[in-house]
Image 1 (tube, rainbow over the protein chains, first blue to last red):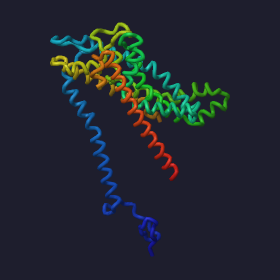
Image 2 (cartoon, rainbow over the protein chains, first blue to last red; image 1 turned 180 degrees about the vertical axis):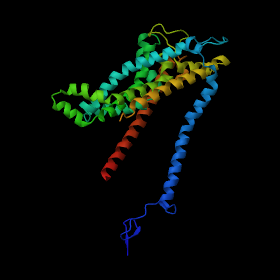
Image 3 (spheres, helix red, strand yellow; image 1 turned 135 degrees about the horizontal axis):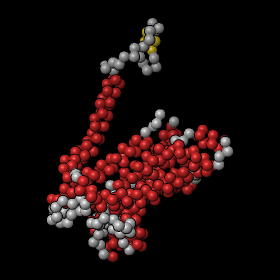
Image 4 (cartoon, chains in turn purple, brown; image 1 turned 90 degrees about the vertical axis):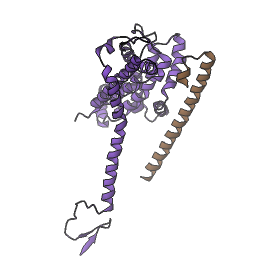
Length: 298
Length: 50
């Protein structure tokens, strides 16, 4: 006597069904094909990054030396030189961007997740943050040019930092909101239960618990803006000298690559390759950092 | 166009480039609004079926 399962398989009464995979079954075959397809797609997705890294290491690796980090960009037919001022400029502008966007972003995320998640202001802010994620970076540059550069009367590291902050803000807001939402309800209830005010609960319980997630968002935001060139073209411009004040035109790695790659001098083109390699390494370090910070501890 | 023309642009060209930036902003907003709208409708339909 045989029984038939709802899916059409017949099993002998009393005997356990065989769980061994049979390749003759259509679903097993399609499962294997889809798995192989997914593996191939995953490998294909990695090819662009690997090939870009390979090319940068081949072209720019040979120029890597200490003088690149300590010397100023060379003039036309000059040999040697480096881009120390561009590294400093990039770091300063990213720091200004982080100083502006982290407090605003984290506090906005606190409002979105804790204070008014379903309020009209909350929904509008969330919508605008999502729109800002897809905002063309050049528009941030044009906006800051009109608002900051024209008002200050000069290109500056401050204007560059503000334009990068605009691009960094949505990443910080949306990632921090997700991190804050992951904090267990029980922890908040326990804090409120022992007499904490809402502010104390947020400052002493919610924010410290969500800190790894928030930091991941911050580092991802930094990694995103570190390689931006379009907004800096309108706001920080470029300088061949070391940064002495944040209110003057400032060099950055991305603009240096943009300028040097179109020059007819071999030395400058090699410097552009080396600067590209350094920039990619900086962004890679930030990305790896974000993965390490966001990794589950238990 | 914005990146290549802006550094050498005079006051009149800057105005024209600002209009170009405005058009780009409008396109971005429309694409984003349509995308978010589609996502909301799809999510609503899926949650309705579940």
